[in-house]
Image (cartoon, rainbow, N blue to C red; front, side, top):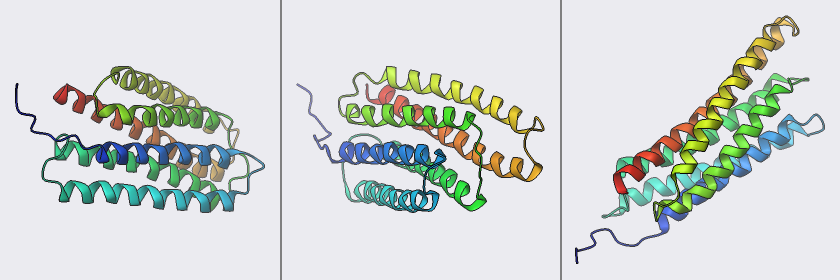
Amino acid sequence: MGLRLRPVDTSFYDLFTQSAQHLVGGAELLAEMLSDSSDKAQVAERMRAAEHAADETTHEIVKKVNSTFVTPFDREDIYALGSGLDDVMDMMDEAVDLILLYEVKSLPPELSEQVDVIQRCAELTAASMPRLQSMQSLEDYWIEINRLENAGDRNHRRTLAKLFSGEYPTIEVLKLKDIVESLESAIDAFEKVANTVEQIAVKEG
């Protein structure tokens, strides 16, 4: 029987799961921010608190990597996954902040479709992080994230086409385009997380 060099330590997986759960909460706040009836200043404040909590989890991941002699998988992959999860939260926080700062009164309905994609990506990511420990049943995760990213790309193109159709005043177009790009960046960041998970699974599987 071969010697097991890597100890059974669930704490990294727990931290990745916690980080992904922050994304589920962030996506819910993002959806709330798009509601016409929401108190946008209050939602933005809650989002800042959520982003701060996510940062704390990322710092815990980095601290644990730096203090652990034997990690469950390659250190660079742990850094990449922790950083990737953090990037998603940053992009969602940026979108919420822009909606507040720009005082956008009317948001195109297409943005809700993008937020639906983001919420689904967040749920899938949170469900998949605990499975890193066994490296089982992960392929469906990155395949579905890729499909959602493609759907997000199509939504993104349609939204930009509507923004530049002449329906909106120029100043509103400039504001909305920044928000649209932040949402697109969040979806792209989810795909990077899924790609990192795939790379880890290939190495460790």
